[in-house]
Image (tube, rainbow, N blue to C red; front, side, top):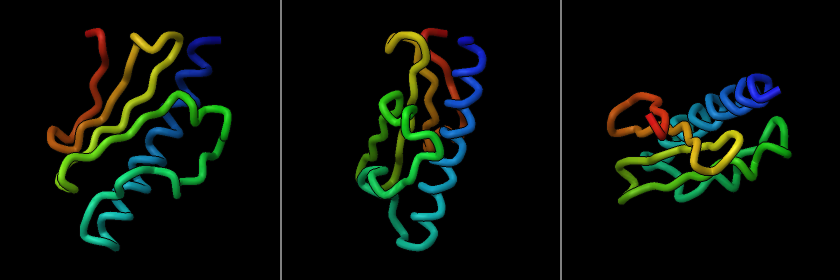
Length: 85
Protein backbone atom coordinates (compact mmCIF):
# COMPACT_ATOMS: atom_id res chain seq x y z
CA UNK A 1 0.00 0.00 0.00
CA UNK A 2 2.80 2.42 0.87
CA UNK A 3 4.48 1.74 -2.48
CA UNK A 4 1.26 2.65 -4.32
CA UNK A 5 1.01 5.91 -2.38
CA UNK A 6 4.67 6.72 -3.07
CA UNK A 7 4.11 6.03 -6.78
CA UNK A 8 1.16 8.45 -6.88
CA UNK A 9 3.09 11.11 -4.98
CA UNK A 10 6.12 10.75 -7.25
CA UNK A 11 3.97 11.18 -10.38
CA UNK A 12 2.34 14.27 -8.90
CA UNK A 13 5.74 15.65 -7.87
CA UNK A 14 7.05 15.33 -11.42
CA UNK A 15 4.00 17.20 -12.71
CA UNK A 16 4.47 19.97 -10.16
CA UNK A 17 8.13 20.31 -11.09
CA UNK A 18 7.11 20.58 -14.74
CA UNK A 19 4.58 23.27 -13.80
CA UNK A 20 7.26 25.26 -11.91
CA UNK A 21 9.72 25.14 -14.81
CA UNK A 22 7.02 26.05 -17.35
CA UNK A 23 6.04 29.00 -15.16
CA UNK A 24 9.66 30.17 -15.06
CA UNK A 25 9.97 29.85 -18.81
CA UNK A 26 6.95 32.10 -19.31
CA UNK A 27 7.58 34.58 -16.47
CA UNK A 28 11.39 34.53 -16.08
CA UNK A 29 11.04 33.79 -12.35
CA UNK A 30 9.91 30.83 -10.29
CA UNK A 31 6.40 31.06 -8.85
CA UNK A 32 6.10 32.24 -5.25
CA UNK A 33 3.85 29.27 -4.52
CA UNK A 34 2.10 26.42 -6.30
CA UNK A 35 -1.48 27.53 -5.61
CA UNK A 36 -2.15 27.76 -9.36
CA UNK A 37 -1.12 24.15 -9.89
CA UNK A 38 -4.10 21.82 -10.36
CA UNK A 39 -3.42 18.54 -8.59
CA UNK A 40 -4.30 15.45 -10.58
CA UNK A 41 -5.28 13.84 -7.27
CA UNK A 42 -6.39 16.58 -4.89
CA UNK A 43 -6.11 14.25 -1.88
CA UNK A 44 -2.31 14.33 -2.31
CA UNK A 45 -2.01 18.13 -1.99
CA UNK A 46 -1.55 18.01 1.78
CA UNK A 47 1.64 15.97 1.34
CA UNK A 48 3.46 18.71 -0.62
CA UNK A 49 5.30 21.86 0.28
CA UNK A 50 7.11 24.33 -1.93
CA UNK A 51 9.41 27.24 -1.21
CA UNK A 52 11.47 29.61 -3.25
CA UNK A 53 14.41 31.86 -2.41
CA UNK A 54 14.77 35.16 -4.26
CA UNK A 55 13.13 33.62 -7.33
CA UNK A 56 16.45 31.95 -8.18
CA UNK A 57 15.94 28.61 -6.51
CA UNK A 58 13.08 26.42 -5.36
CA UNK A 59 12.59 23.31 -3.28
CA UNK A 60 9.64 20.99 -3.77
CA UNK A 61 9.10 18.32 -1.17
CA UNK A 62 6.60 15.68 -0.26
CA UNK A 63 6.32 13.21 2.55
CA UNK A 64 5.05 9.68 2.64
CA UNK A 65 3.99 7.82 5.74
CA UNK A 66 5.24 10.38 8.25
CA UNK A 67 6.46 13.94 7.79
CA UNK A 68 9.93 12.76 8.81
CA UNK A 69 10.21 10.74 5.59
CA UNK A 70 10.68 13.36 2.91
CA UNK A 71 11.54 13.30 -0.76
CA UNK A 72 12.58 16.65 -2.19
CA UNK A 73 13.80 18.31 -5.35
CA UNK A 74 16.20 21.25 -5.14
CA UNK A 75 16.61 23.28 -8.33
CA UNK A 76 20.07 24.47 -7.25
CA UNK A 77 21.35 20.88 -7.32
CA UNK A 78 18.99 19.67 -10.06
CA UNK A 79 18.16 16.36 -8.44
CA UNK A 80 15.80 14.49 -6.16
CA UNK A 81 16.96 13.55 -2.68
CA UNK A 82 15.53 11.69 0.26
CA UNK A 83 15.55 12.43 4.00
CA UNK A 84 16.58 10.70 6.11
CA UNK A 85 19.22 9.20 3.88
